Image (tube, rainbow, N blue to C red; front, side, top):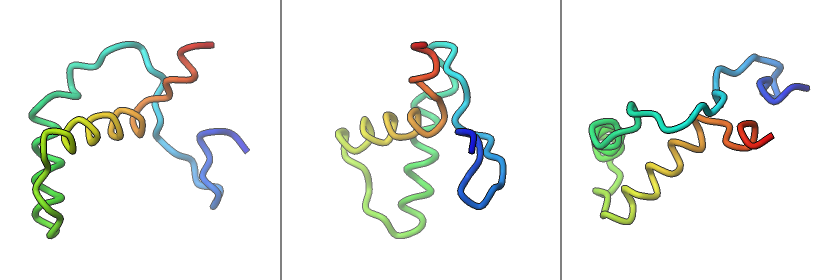
Length: 69
C-alpha cells in the first residue's frame, strides 16, 4: 500500500511533496479555518492554538519527510 492510499484503498490527494515555504499558508487561511471551527461550536483559538493549527495544517498538507530524502 502506497503512502497515498488510505486504508479503504481510495487514493489520497494529500500530503503533497514539500517544495519549500508556501505563501498560501498565511494568516488569512488560518483565520478561515479557525472561523469554521468556531462556527461548528469549538472554542475560539488563542495565540498558542493558532500556532498549533498552522503546524497541524502544514503537516496535513505536506510530506516533510519526503523532502528530506
